[in-house]
Image 1 (spheres, rainbow, N blue to C red):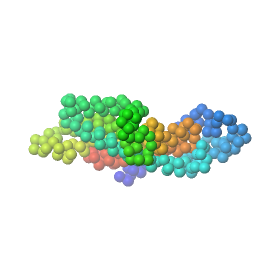
Image 2: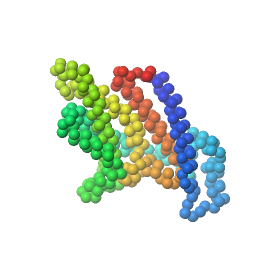
Image 3: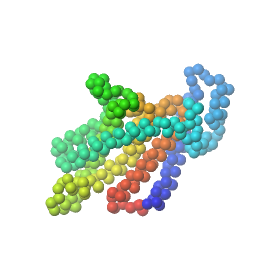
Image 4: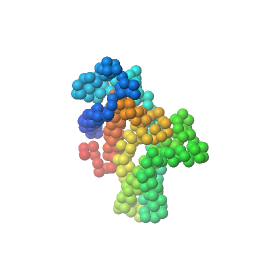
Amino acid sequence: MLKFIFRRALESVGVLLCVSLITFYLSKAIPGGPFDQEKKVPEAVKKQLEAYFGMDEPDWKRYLTYTFQFPSLPSTKFPNRRVGEMIASKFPVSLELGAYALIVALALGIPSGILASLKPNTALDYVPSSLSMVGICLPTFVMGPLLVIIFAVQLRWLNATGWENPSDKILPSLTLGFYYAAYVARLTRGGMLEVLNQDFIRTALSKGASMVSVIFKHALRGGLLPVVSFLGPAAAGLIAGSFVVETVFAIPGMGQEFVKAVSNRDITFITGLVLFYASLIIFFNLLVDIAQVFLNPKLSFKD
């Protein structure tokens, strides 16, 4: 397993370098600059600022600096704050939101998928599948305002924005979690249907094993393999923070900061956030690959 992890770590370095290179040149292509304001900055002051942030250096040198030293670099919008410090201050909020949303997604998606697979092409299958399709087709920027209108404006049970009280976290967690629950439900249904049609399942049932025992002891391990594969990038996206959900509910997480960083042309902060997101995705994909080997006996770390 250590050789497998080491090999994947080497591959990840190449991926991160490609991501950082693309981010660097896309950031340069953004119209305007970090020092452009309604009131034009004097040219001499602008040159001093560019020299302070290393923007007058060659592209190759700026790229290496942004890629390998981004945690210690100052933000071009907030020069008194470091990029690493800003990420560290916002990440706990996004981590909490992502954890709640992941719990919602798994709690709704897995049972719905299992129920749908037990009675295919019946009402028990059509209802969860239809709800899953609604969840997939209904984006978070529509689901969020709808929940706000119903539960915050009309019923007045919950607050529309904020992240201070426990009740403030219900609507954003449901908005983000329901979207991913739809995918989890469909993947669980497909995986379970494939496993339940296997010979060893019919053998277990013919020997008198109950359906509950067959599901939890035999079918669930293989049926959840598609879900495990999906949870790698999904967990990274959830924990890194949703741009839309954090903006709609005014949550002070990394997603909202990313939107602000792009608007402010804050190149150092943009680079840091992208590399942080990419690292999370790579890390969770590695965990998924390891989990798949343990869940699927046909796989090994040598594959």
